[in-house]
Image (tube, rainbow, N blue to C red; front, side):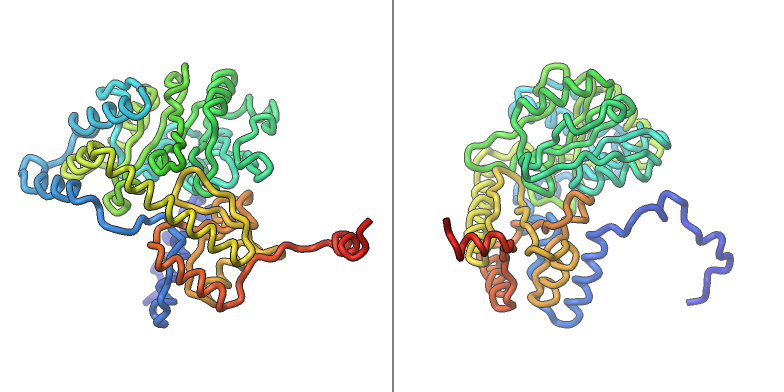
Length: 413
């Protein structure tokens, strides 16, 4: 292909050049190359649920497609039916009362909304608090907007829960927006209700906009019920909460999400979106209504499916030397790399030797180094095959033993 006729015109904006390659796009390239070579990949990398979308949702979409009234531009603020369904769903699940005419907005998937919210509210130089590790959209959106991202380090010692005491006073005073996410992607961590109370108190004290990503709320196990930020008194004054139908309802490719919460914050996002898109196709909104109205038995089946996979894979990893914390929610395991190996090197070694795809933890920020994220998106047979391949390739976890430990073992007191 001939060179671009005017090289200067091919220069992207500084905001794009500052972004590192998106890890999932890079993983897609590596997977495509492996498939071209005939490798039978077991993809446990992306959070792309396996299995079909529930049949009632598909049927609702088909019916909506047959209605010519759905073929024009949808309302910018979403259809009244979908907004009402969202608020009724929130009331059922969390006891949170929301106004469908101002406190709910359909999105083209939650990732789109999370990123566009940054463009709507973050000016160049504004300080944004983001945990590390975190879902990439939480820090890439602010970076695209020109914000200064201050990483709040998470640690296993604190169960991957944000420690507000680690945020310096001067940073807290400068902060404008705080993104966070529990149940957490990528660590699978869950936070108690008391933590959400502390977050609201912190944000009110420093006048910070809270952005909570609740996209794994239904994938909860062992009787655990996640907390919505909007349950907390005063939260709606300063916050919004994002959700998606991708995970629970196997609708990742449908690109349906929504945001709820403070009407003024939502209005700012809506204003931006009216200049960027025409909203979510009305037929998809009709399908989303059907999804949110599915009977509870469907949700219980989904939870049981992921819980069974979680328990099975953790038990199998133990045979290879791993001791993995059992998460109470999400569709992921957060697995430490073997001592002495970095996240990228370990993920590449596993891919090259076994055809099993894992996501390196450093894709979620510096705080994710030393871990890989394993998605529970395959059935038990495929998970067993993944373990067998690791075993055959000699890949296992082995704790480093210090010289002092060896001395103590040889010469006990």
